[in-house]
Image (tube, rainbow, N blue to C red; front, top):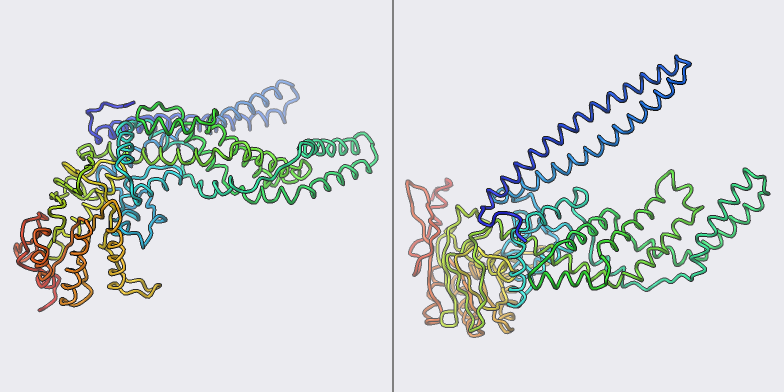
Length: 601
C-alpha cells in the first residue's frame, strides 16, 4: 500500500524524508556523545574505586569497586548500542540523499554499474549503455542480493512477451510508492551489498547427497562428551590416563571414518554467513509485505509454498555457517577438535540441505524478481511524468511520441517523435556530427528495453508491438579476436539479419552504417541490407551523415522516410537544437568542427 501522499513530487518526498532522517541522526549523535561522556566518567569512577580499594580495608570499598565496574559495563553496552543506531540513522540519511542525487542527475558512477553483465557480443546491451558507469542499470538497480541484480539484468537483455511485461508493469505500479519497503530493504544487514551467488547455491543444492546414519549422528555427540568426561576424571578425580587415551583413540577413529563425507560438505559451503543473513532479512521483509498485483501474489505464494518461513530457514543456514566459521577462532580452535565441531556442523548443514535445499532455487528466484520489481518501482516513482507503455497486438508498430533519452536530465532532454509501421517500416536519419542522430537511436532503444522490462518510459506516449531488438551503434574493433571495426560491424548486421527471420519481428537501430568502407561499397551494401531487413518484416532506424545514403529511399519507395537533424553557426560557434525535421540534411559541419578546435584548413 502507498506510504506517502500520492500527489507529492519525488523531490518533496525525498527532501522531507532526508530532513527527518537528518534531525533523527542529530538527536542520536547527541545522545551518543552523552553516553560517551558517561562511559568516560564511569571509567574514571572505576579507577577511583580501585585506588580506594587498594588503600582501604573496609568491605564497603569492594562493594564500591563492584558497583563502579557494573556501571562501566552498562555504559559500554549502552554506548555501543547507541553507536549502532547512529550508524543506521546515517545510512538512512544517505539513502534519501542518494535519491536526491538521482533526481538531480548526479548519480553516475555512484551506484551498482553491473559491468559483470556486459556481453560484448550482445545485440544491443553495449550499444544502448545498459551496463557500466552512468548506465541504465546503475540508474535502476537497488537490489541487495546478486539474485536481484541478475534478474534485473535479464529483464533488460532478454526478450519478454507482452503478457510478462504487463504483469511486471502492474506490480511496479503497486510498488511505486512503497517507500518504506525499499528503505527497509536498503537498511537490512550490514552496510555492504550481499554477495550471495545464486549459481553457487543452486549447484550446492544439486550436489549428490552425503548421508549420515542415525548412530553416526549420535556418536558425534556422545564421543566428545566421553572425551571431556575422561579428561575431567583423569585430572581431577584420579582416573588412569589410559581412560583418556581410549577416548581420544575412539574419537580419532570415528572422525577418520567420517572424513571422506565431512570434507566435501565443508568444502562446498563457501557462503559467507553475513551474506546469508542479508538474504534471510530480505526474505523476511518481503514475507511481511501484503500485495495486490497478481505477479506479486504469485511470488509471495512461491515463498509460502513450503509451509515454512523461507527467511527463517535461510537464517538457520546462516547460523550454521557462523558456527562452522567459529572453529577458525584462535581461542575456540583448540577446543573444536575435541568437540568434533566440524563433523557436527557438517552433519547439521547436510541435514538442512536435504530438508530445505530443494526449495532454495524457488526462494532465490522469488527474491530476485521482487528485488528487480522494487528497482523498477523506485525508478517509476522518481519519474512521475514518464508514460506507461501500451502493447499493440496487431501488425508491427512502434509509436513513440515525444520520446527522450532516459539518462539525460529531464529538464534538458530534447524530445522527438517516431512512428514505424508496416506501411513505412524504416526511417533514414541524416545530419551533421553531434547533431543528435545517435542519441535518437539510443532513446528509442533504451525506452523499448524499459517497456519490455515493465517500467515507464521517457515519452508522452509509447505504443509497441512485440519486438526483438538489434543494434549496431557502438561496434568497435577487437584486437584479441583479430577483428577490424568494419568486420565487427558486418558480423553484427548479419546477426540482425538472422534475427529478422524469427518471430516476433526485429527492430533494428543502425548508426552510420558501413562507415568503415568507401562510399561506393557503402551505398550498395547498405541498400541491399536495408532492403533485406524490410522484406523480412523488420522495422527500424538507420543514421548517416553520408548524403549519398539518403537516396536509398528512392530504391525502397514508400518503405523509407528521410528525416534529419541540423545545426547552425552562431558567432562562429556550432549550435544544435536536436530537433528532428523532415527531409534530407543539406549541409555538413565537419569542416566547421575542425576549425572550431583550431585546425587550419
